[in-house]
Image (cartoon, rainbow over all chains, first blue to last red; front, top):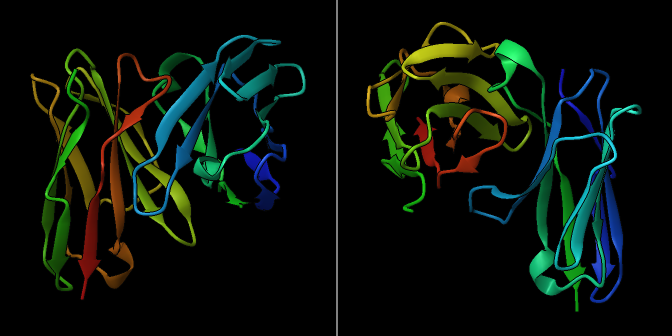
Amino acid sequence: QQPVQSPQAVILREGEDAVINCSSSKALYSVHWYRQKHGEAPVFLMILLKGGEQKGHEKISASFNEKKQQSSLYLTASQLSYSGTYFCGTGVRGTNAGKSTFGDGTTLTVKP
Amino acid sequence: KAGVTQTPRYLIKTRGQQVTLSCSPISGHRSVSWYQQTPGQGLQFLFEYFSETQRNKGNFPGRFSGRQFSNSRSEMNVSTLELGDSALYLCASSFEGQWAFFGPGTRLTVL
């Protein structure tokens, strides 16, 4: 069962902040985030492996709440280059370790 | 390290034909997953190969098959193509399968 992302779409002005949420009905082992620009392949942003883990890359960070089975991606002081579709992927333990399931994506548009 | 490569990048086929797509993972990566991406359906998991064995399979008909070679390169085959098979097919490479580096994709158009 695929994770649910919200919102489906966000429109921002440069410099504004955004939060994208990803939740699952299944117990999660890992959450990973990707960004896909139009006509390109998804690019790996980061993975969170432990409940409570937070990671960041420049002005993009994420958190993973294992108990709530959800993760959030935070984009601060957005730049035009942040535009694209953001996907969360979720992983489980054991034999299904390689079967990542992706949300439907959140389209982020940053305007000047 | 070189990234994930996929060939061909574009394909045009007609209904009923078959097609084979190829994926070369990042050197040292043993897991290769395949995804179908369409505007209405997002990223749909096809299957994953790990050390030449199919480890996971998605909910696609048997017309979709794959294999992995000893050098970790993987191929995906679709037989008896249907119009609905038109999509971007993405291959993802990872060391053990938890997260992935995607190739540029093969855009398949079925006429």
